[in-house]
Length: 556
Image 1 (cartoon, rainbow, N blue to C red):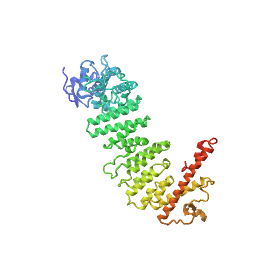
Image 2 (cartoon, rainbow, N blue to C red):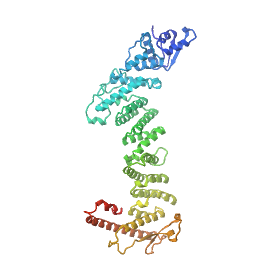
Image 3 (tube, one colour):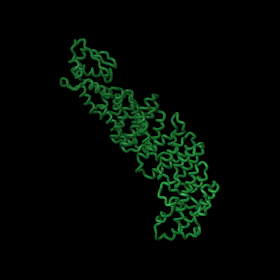
Image 4 (cartoon, helix red, strand yellow):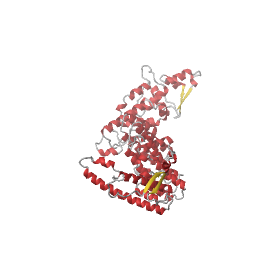
């Protein structure tokens, strides 16, 4: 009896055929038993039959051949899915049904050749209903596990290059290596090249690649190898498709897999890889969740970045030259993930990097003061040993943005710690007309405090200090008046000779500052001379580091 014609989308069954299939299919027998109409006119249509017409014909051949069919890697998945769809479980006349036979064939999958495994994967991909209804089926799981097992054995030895030609029996899939996975060339140069199986798996869609990668992670395949495969897959698929939606799916899958490896399996993703993904994502409208994952991965490793990495152009429609908002997100991720336990060396590296970035973006005329200040204050004060670099960046910013009000300039200067400015920077600031006068006074007070502490820590027996006195002194006005309200305390800077007037012009201020600078230089010379003499005297009595720690920072 010939087979009836069938359409790929639906499979019509007439009663004479149903009687044969119903012996093996519990599903069809149940439908046939419920029918109340004449059997000769009964017609059943199955929509979305697994494998379409080919899958239905395979199942029909099994029924017509009294439960016998030749199964191989190219049709086993179709037969397995058709058997599951038609509920072909129970034995008929002592002959195992289709589902049992396919499951028994699956037990031998570990003996399949590499090309046969790939054909089976290709069948999984071609059968869209398989992915919808049978993604957790025994067939797919065993096929994935066997392929990953071969990869693991290959990685235990060493990667092998693609040397084999196309297998004519592969059903149109190009295989670069049809030998067993443990054979490889023992050369260290292949460690940075694509493994022999990279190209073989490029034909898979993102859904199957994600399943495959999760299986790789479960089998504890090297994460660096998985990352290299994902990037190879992304590059190969992007070069062969122009569909933007497909590119987005691929890139989101790549980001998700890297995120899982880093956050759930304590993997360290190379920073170059992360920024490579970032550059690609800038031109694609990926989901917010994936973008946040990528920003979190980059931010947590920000100490590995360079200035060039951070100079990302602003998105379309934003007037800024560089994407400052993105860098702030990186900083937030860095501080949020390890702010309380991060090593001081890492924090200082990030602080230096951000200072360089601020100096680079300062000349941007479109950069708003709020963004500039947000960058300047995002780093904890303890991460900066000196604020000189930030001061020079502020100087450049105020020069370009001369139209700022006095209030805006004062807000920007709030990002400075005057106690961590060098004497040269303080002198420059106090003479800098671009800065508000309040900042000049604060810089002067800070330098006076440093000088006072330095003089107090210098031995009084020094001949250069005899008869000398600091050019400026401090006094607390409210303390002299006996005022107990600390909120109204005022610090007044005045000259010991009575010549300094707080309202004097800039020339008088410059003269005093120059005198202070000279004084600092003299004190530095004294400290160096004393340090040398003390080292000679106490060399045999006191450990060298004990005295060095007691010296003021300015002298050490």
